[in-house]
Length: 172
Image (cartoon, rainbow, N blue to C red; front, side):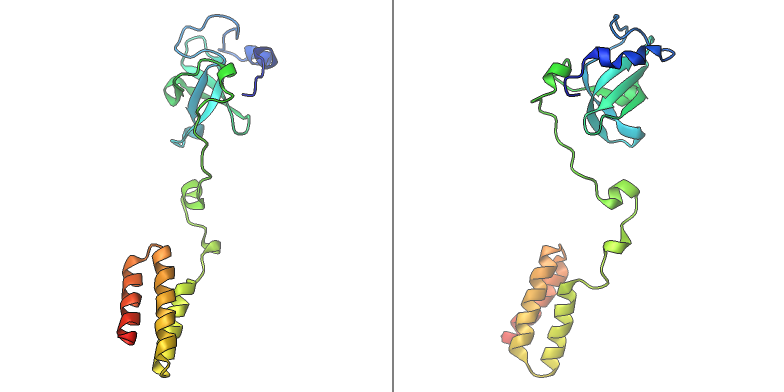
């Protein structure tokens, strides 16, 4: 949190099964402690602060740093952030910022709308073939080199190597 006082969260004391926020906690987590919690049980842990702990210590309510949302999880889905004991250490703590997830990671599928039918380097290679057939070897070699660079930047090493060799053969 951002320096919120426990008093602002006082409404949590009315939840059934949750102890007094100011009272002693029987389990390992305590209100205000800096933790990472398994958001929506997705397997990804995000930083936050404990806002409530059940009397038996098995249910932990965490307010996430990024959006202020709260979630109640079992204790085994919450872990302490080493070296941080309370909200006062949240500012300037060494929590790692989370990178935004790709559509594929978040949704389990790739966003097909953002994929193009042909990558620009593939089109350059096709154009190079046409240039070569029409006798423009120098232009074809230059296009194959550009296509190879594009393929390499996209991680298509085998394709990049193939096109680079074609360019060398043409100029060879």
